[in-house]
Image (cartoon, rainbow, N blue to C red):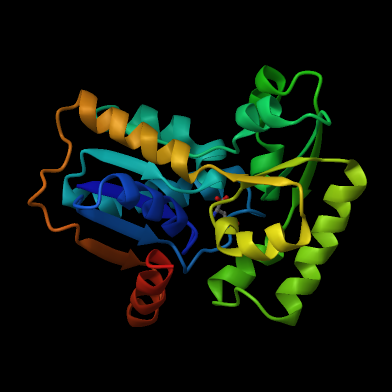
Length: 250
Ligand code: DGL
């Protein structure tokens, strides 16, 4: 059993990648839609919400917990690892290392939440892997709102994506890292505005890490498992389930 949580629906972009590698894995996903967005909140709130999310997931006896949210990972993962020391925990961070390796212009963009960009762990990541690279950091909270309400295209999305793309181009960035798990659902709109710019998301790297952890624990799913996903949310359940299933298959 793989357990995941996010502030809302965004972590499904991670679950989708995990299921590409482990199609029969059973999973339980908690979306904290009563408290979304996390990205503009103080650290103490994000840590509290993250602990409450883990408590929802523990009864399912997961072999691994995926913090499928950059914001919760950046702010709360060490508190979670301290508290739940027996549980393997995998987090998600912007793929700055890969972005720094791929750029030829030496300018990259990171799109994330304000809480992620201000966190000590993100600043450390940047220092470690993006030395000598100019990093354009943009907080884009409205993209979280778009994805939460199911608005993945249309004039408002296009306008916002165009504005962000102009800033990316003006900075001379040739690689952009999506540092929020909601953003892969707007990826095609962004790619359309940024020809020649590589847009990276963290999902594939997180999925590979989950496979490594399960392999080491001898808890890889067998081919006969059902691949069932159990949906949990702090908000309205029916609506969440319907939208979550749709995103998972997108
Ligand atoms: N999906 C979350 C992330 O990866 C954050 C969205 C939010 O709640 O602000 O950062």
